[in-house]
Image (cartoon, rainbow, N blue to C red):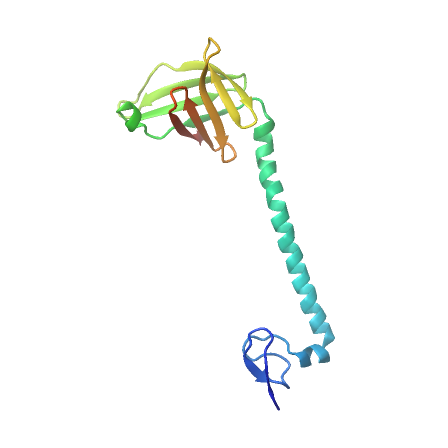
Length: 170
């Protein structure tokens, strides 16, 4: 009886054993003596690799499918709210964009401390894929917005160069 190295874990095992006592891998004796077991092992490995490849290849298609409806639609029906904006306006303010499917959007700022809101401003918007341009009544670009994370977030740049992130309200 001689010692050989296991092909899986590299530890010393007897040359007469059918499987490694350390990791359970089949040895050359078990493969020669039991070809069905070896074939099952190979089939198991091949099926596992194919499943892994299928998962890796399908992930981009699933992500693209989620964004397709959002990207192809020319309108949006959703509300987005910015978190507290004390750094910009001095009080606990919340800004809300409400998009309607008719191409209009209202923008309103509310003070969370006093529970009062300013008069809403009405604008029109044009949606191109994930980009949303918001225009004044005189057709001037007021906000340039971008939908992010499958429409869960909206980043809007005003024309002074400031931007604000808004979260979708469900």
